[in-house]
Each structure stands twice: as structure tokens, then as C-alpha cells.
Image: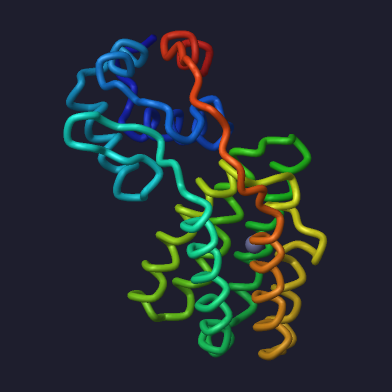
Length: 226
Ligand SMILES: [Zn+2]
């Protein structure tokens, strides 16, 4: 492996492995082993782990080091319930600023989601759908609320990766395009209701049982990635 891997690359590879369940909830992330696998210093690895910890994807305990966060059933419910409460509230603000250009931007994002779905790239799909939600929140103009929702979206990605089924990302109530069409038509109430139903559906698709810890060969896991 090259010695010039960027922190961003390492971040993405670890996140991908977590979301794809090669690193399941509770799995330990030893700095020395990751450092060996990526051919980078422990300092670089630590920086990446700290970023993941900030996003609540990874938990760092004083004497135990880093491990993939293991969201509890209760936490999973609370994260989704918070989103169900907050995200519909931002719809009227989003609509005030909505324009053709924005509609095009979000339609482009849906295209990328569909592509990932076609390629059965679950990791990208989880990331892209989360991005759709937090970009929409940022678009409301309330940056405090948007940052909060962004963090809830990261935590949801881990929760969906840990407990989700196929229905957690591509749901039966229609895809994100339906929401864009409602926003295009200026249908505030229907858009709010769509968002509430959509997130409720995601919550109900979660299978709240936890998989067991397993032995992970970091060298093998990351050497096969390009
Ligand atoms: Zn969604």
C-alpha cells in the first residue's frame, strides 16, 4: 500500500467498512493494526478516529481505545424520533428559499442515489441519502438546527448500517424525488407530512437486534480496497 494515503481516504475506507458491516458495531479499532494496514503513522490514524468519534460513528474510551459505536435500541429510537420531530419543521423555511436551481441540485442528488441503488452499493446509498437530508436542512437557512440535524444524520447512518434492512434506505413511500416534486409545487403541508411519514417508515424498518463481535483481520480488510 502507498505511503501517501490521505486522511480523507482512510476516513472513507473505515467509514465504508463500518457501513458495510465488515467492521460491525462494537468492533475494536486498534491504532497499531490500522496504522500497519494503511502504512501510515498512528498519529494520522488517531486523527481519523477522532473525526469519526466526533460524528458518533466511533467511540473512544480512555483505556480501551476506539471501537465502532454500538448504538442501543433506545438510542436508535431516540435519534429517529428526534429527526421525525425536527426535519418536517424546517420544510416551510426550505420552501421560502426554494428555486429552480435548488430543485435541479437535489434532483441531481437523487440521480446519484438511484445509481448507487442500481449498483447495490449500500455504503454509498446510506451516505447519499443522509447527505440529501442534511443538505436540505442546511438549505433552511438555520445553521444551528442544520448542524444538529447533520449530526443526527451521521448517527442514523450508523444505526441504519447496524439495524437497517434494504427498506431503510429505499422505502416504499417513494423516493426523495416525491419530496422534490412537492416542494416544486409549493405544497408545504404535504411536504411536511411526506417527511414525517418517510422518517417514520425508516424507523419502523429497523431490526433492533445486535450482531456479535467478530475477529477482524485489518491487514486483509484494507489491503483489498483500492
Ligand atoms: Zn430519506
